Length: 272
Image (cartoon, rainbow, N blue to C red; front, top):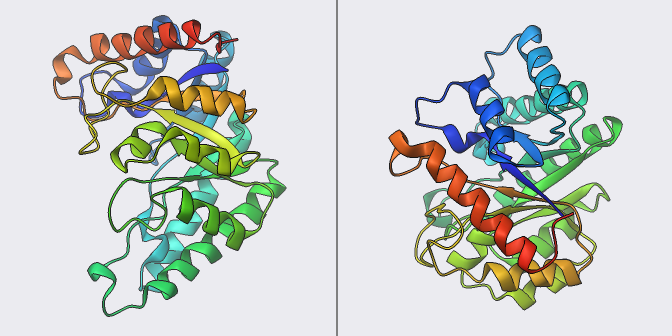
């Protein structure tokens, strides 16, 4: 496995966008996931590509969150789908392998609009994006979110969703911190064997979505990584840290996440 980092780790801090890309490499990460700024021009993308190539730091995934995929307003929903397609276009240029999507949550506590209607909207959107991604030779990774009304928030819903989309390049992004918040044991991951395209890693206290460095919480990250390995997953584990509690010490925060996770992966002999 390789150890990567999503550059959204610098959200809310004073670290400038391009400086953050360099910092990720300097800290020691193997790969990077890009959460882009949609104000970017073509020359900004060229700069990202050049930087990552010179630092020998491949771009794994394009990452963003458009929960409007299930909006009842069709023009809003179309904007979300088209924005993800734009990310795929960026990903083709940057030689990324994946697009990570966030499906969103049922609105109005599953009242008024039937949940099966919103579910089908998400399925249709993911299928359309997967068809487009296939032409780009990329995968679409579905994020497992930990929130009560998230469409995909456990292994059961991920399994059903992937089956409903029924596209070979639509795969699960297994977020280990999210699994812990939901109380999902490591053994459940076996059910996704052969359908895992990405992994996010962070720690938390088991009650809320904390996004802490490894070792700060009580998630069974060792158990999760062992099962992933036994499932045959040998790709990238991306650290997800966003909106740190102390932005003035964000570099130390990301450094800690790298060191503790690298230590755990070395202990398990998983990092290649």
